[in-house]
Length: 428
Image 1 (cartoon, rainbow, N blue to C red):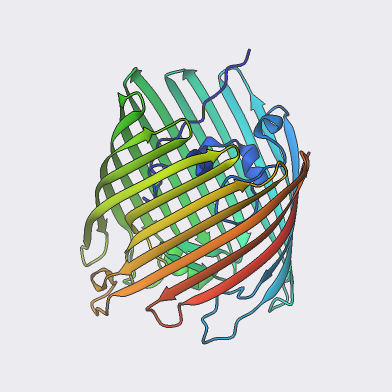
Image 2 (cartoon, one colour):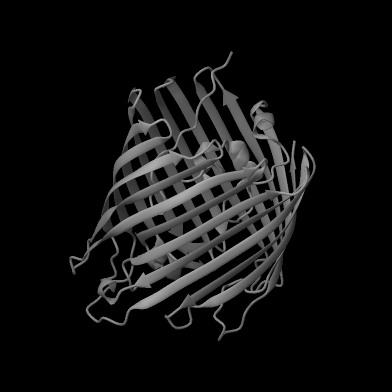
């Protein structure tokens, strides 16, 4: 009988947004098959999947397909004072998933090819081609020691710049590669460690976006986990992050090193209700001529509740320092609220709601250069309800809406955007 590999991820994420992610929202705990089924560019949340993960994992190859028709009333996220470009687009996205489970090792991979056809898009290019590859290897030496390696490469067009509180759409191609290595060691029944290394490379072809967003980040995180009670685990952790930016503008340097120290706990209230809390401090040093140092608190609290069969809800609040896509600032302080709900209405019909609100605060002391300005706010709200209907284990349909609004004190930056889509997803 084959031994099941446990996908365990206790580590902090490299942007400091959350040390704990409920099971329904934590990608590292899902198989690559779930990535193939969740192939739309939406906020991550558990999908109403037409094929169960066990069905996909039982086959070496699984073929997926997704077709989506979308209307976007502000494709380039233009400010209200400028002309907006509304557009219709059609996405065709075939994919393949590979799984090879062994006695103590699991090897899996997924590839998605995206073909986006735009109606009346400015310019001659009406077709965008995207590539998305994900590979993962997990190995369990014993029930107490395990490792997990994962790499994802994405090449896409018209990227959405998601940095701190901003969602900015820029014309042009870009690629992003993320690599993660995770290890777990349970030394004694009540005490164990987890260690995680993350590497991210981002490169934009658009020179305006490239000058301020191209970067490489390294993050190493170590958690000490003590099983205090049967339902409670106490945590003491440390994380270090290196951010190296590629700037073409002289004097505009956002290279930095961040140190994070935190304590916290994971608690299981019931079999269906879990929660977490983290609190600590952040220290970030910028490699600029100003010799800038930022010290601030870090806090995160979250909960995950399965309130009925097939019905789940997750909530998270985080206070942290975040990178920003505004080149004149090195960093911003953010408060982020995130809510995810999935409601099973009937056996075949379900609805989900994803929402985030980020309040960003930009201090003049964090501006690059000798001339200081005023303190700025950069707040963004996004809500995305979706209806999902499953015809059978091979086919499902989606109808969704997304509203995004950015309110900023910086001139010509704020915008609002509405998107409506209908899609069909198949798996065989």
